Amino acid sequence: MENRAMRVILRLEGLALGLLCIWLYKTFHHGWLMFALLFLAPDLSMLGYLLGPRVGAAVYNLAHSWTTVVVAFFVVWFLFGGDTLLLALITILGTHIGIDRALGYGLKLPTGFRDTHLGRI
Image 1 (tube, rainbow, N blue to C red):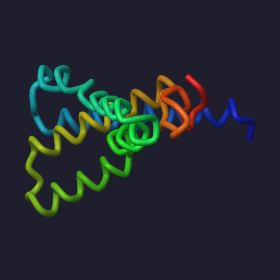
Image 2: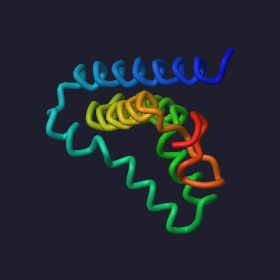
Image 3: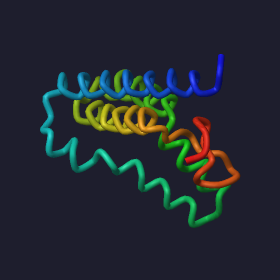
């Protein structure tokens, strides 16, 4: 499959997962003000770049990985009894990641902030 077509599929996948997380957030009945205030919070992980591109990419990718979302969701579900506030926070992270992917912002490569698994931004 052509690289361009693959990037489109990955972006649509991100959009779908982001929308799923918005729906999940709605089911937890927490306010949309909290959602709006915390939506960009994962981007604070960019501060890792102050320690160089390798550390920055690692910190950014940890905060922008679907693995982080899924592991956190199950940890909260099984160890904290499905606390809806914590689950809501995790769905905000998932929404952020999904929208980032839909916009073409991918996981970072250690070569620099603009180099991602979805191509150069």
